[in-house]
Amino acid sequence: MKRLTIFLHYDNDNIIDDYIIYWLKYMNKLSDILLVSNNNLPIEESKKVEKLVLKHFIGSHGGKGEKSLKKAYEYAYNNHILEKYDWVIIITDSIYGPFFDIEPYIIEKEKKEDICYGFTKAMVNTENEHIQSTFLAMPKKAFLSKEIYEHLINLDKLGNKSDAVVYGEIKWSQILRNLGFKLEGMFDDIDPNYIKYEPVKPAFVEMIEKGYPFVRKTLFTKNYLLIENIKDYLKLKNIIPKECFDNMQKNIDRTISKDILYINMEYPEIRKNIEKKQNILDQKYREEYNYPLEFLEVQTFIEKLIFLKLNYQTEKILKYSDKYIVREYLKDKIDNQLLMPLLGLYNNEIEILSNLDLDKLDENTLLCSTINDTKIYFNKNINYIQLLHLINFESSKYFNSLEWQYKYIKPRLLTYKDEYHIYDQGILYKIFCFNSKPSVIKVISKQNNNTYANFYNLEWDKLDIIQEFTNIEYIEKPPYLKEMINIAEKLSNEFPIFVSVDFIGNNEKFYFDKFDFYSEELLHPINNKKYDLEWGNYIKIPNIQNEYLTLDKDIYLRTLIKYDILSLQLMEYKKELFSIRKVVDKIAWWIPFKSWRIKFRDKLYKSKN
Figure 1 (cartoon, helix red, strand yellow):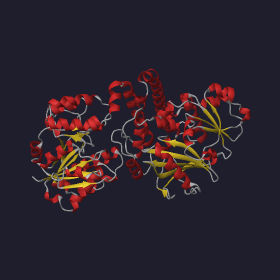
Figure 2 (cartoon, rainbow, N blue to C red; figure 1 turned 135 degrees about the horizontal axis):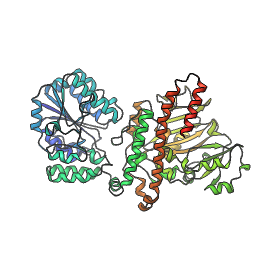
Figure 3 (cartoon, one colour; figure 1 turned 120 degrees about the vertical axis):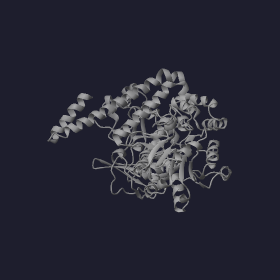
Figure 4 (cartoon, one colour; figure 1 turned 90 degrees about the vertical axis):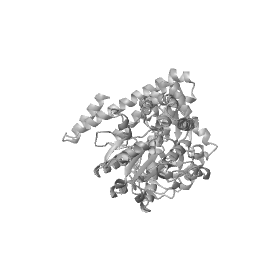
């Protein structure tokens, strides 16, 4: 039998690791190899494999496994290379192995007619049963079929990890079944009674002891919440070949976050909190937006911002999210006229009641809090109770959207002079900066009591994107656009991963508004998957910097954990309320008169609240 292996490789550090070399050396004995490295590898790295592969594709193409597979398959198909082979094997770099000789197993599988087999099968005995993409073998009748060709060359159009599973792995398995192929998994023959679909804690050591030749890399390098896997993998030292274990250990030591190890091993309460926040966000995005989140192999813009929100928490983000403290930083960076004139600062409830004279305020006074986005122009109906509520800790953005920094920002009331009423009548310009470079502008405009949002490139060409608010046909290009872009580029140097530098303006004037790292204005799903993935590719995930590591651990465990628990309880209550409101709305739909429907909804909402 002649075999062709397509091996898909990616590494954040632009290297070909030793466990990859081990794989290639082994498969070189069994097949020819097309290697696709989604990296701009140095020459010395590519030389490591030049004698092991038929062809090596090098270069970053903006995607991961899907685009890499398309590149190799399309090349082999169009150049009539595939016709020379009886079997094609697709392997990704996401598994360590092979720990044992798999050639007898491969030969045995190839004797069967009309089968395709793989590393593992998932969703067994359901309509979505599929072979996972980590290791997949197909005979000539399958890989030369029109159906498989059309499917594989369209894989690069997929968005997030969930799309890759549903439209990638599940879809091609359905195509193979429709072509008359039976799907088989490697572990089926080792332990037919084992019903789990992949080796996960605590099964992977037991499975390898029984002869299973692989283990998922992400069990150790990305699944931070299963720290027990890190401890258990040491048991493999006496089970698998020494070279395999050493290669695996070196890769884990190089790629795993030591900070996350510390959190998981020393502070299980923190680990549980992180996991609970993930569950809350995942449920919210599934139910409200039909947007399932991936937390391990993040790819899209939304997924990566949520990952940063939960895992990248620095003192600088905390400092520059504080509306008062950030002014001190900006004084040395931009013209002071771009900062709205500050009239007063009130550090607590006592200062508000003692020092703030409402009789001296006028309609051009803007009041806002440091812990949320509420902005109020003074009028005669404003009272002290409303102002105290603005700085009440329950109104913090942390409780509303899990923006971690707001639980550390001091609740204070700020008063500004705004004769333009710019937050009522102006336009918000959010300049998205990736790698300290402005790239795209989100423009939010209020007209006729409605809110609209358009996206533009830096030349003010409108982009085909909808996020939360509907588009509007025309928003005039601001006369100060170039100045805003230049300021955004200067300020974004402090945040090399991603930041939105926000300005608020009208025809006469514009002010700096805020640095936005992961607010709801950024995190609402966008309708255009092309941009969701493209912007996601711009964001390079950094080493984990968790808020809990920068605090005194005893203080944290005594106090802040209580704050977190309260916030999670509030988020879960909001989830419950959202579900109840959906039911109420469905019932109200049958009430024939609009006024009755409104009264019915209001009565039930208030009774629940």
